Length: 213
Image 1: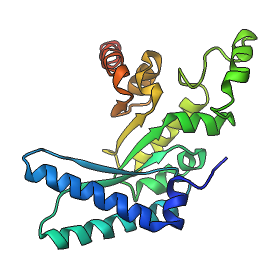
Image 2 (image 1 turned 45 degrees about the horizontal axis):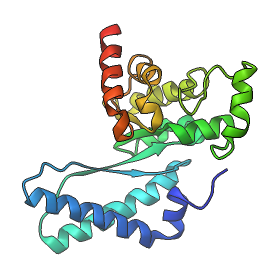
Image 3 (image 1 turned 135 degrees about the vertical axis):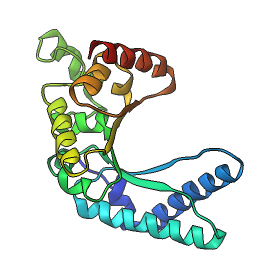
């Protein structure tokens, strides 16, 4: 179920995106002036149609141009999208024509693919595991049979348009060793992102996957 959030909120309340984009670009420019090698990737969330991304990317780029004019200097930045909705996966070739990068929101993609609510999983997933309907909690270890196929399809469609397209994943799956192995060896992702306490696990799992591959 889509609620008024993500790009829907940005399209209906563009001032929020203008404020956020300005803050990101100005912070990056301040960091660069202080000698930091800041690299800016701005992600548009919950995109389901390429037109949603086009709308938000144009607003972000227009806002950045205003900041550059005000400050008399500029910085490099990229505008990409989260792939969290199955429709985005199915139309990844269209979105790749417009986006600088993809990042899978694997938690939301899992939720929308299964039709499960993360708020309710505790009420039925233990029973599903006990009855072997599920072999793993899909919010802990990626469902490679279903969600994983969507991810592989997205990568193939996106890189058919842009062979060097940077594609990663953010979410708790990025710190799960079995999921990291799939992302690296089966899906061909560029990077994983996860919460700080999972970073050592993710690094080790990534290294092991590289050796196995």
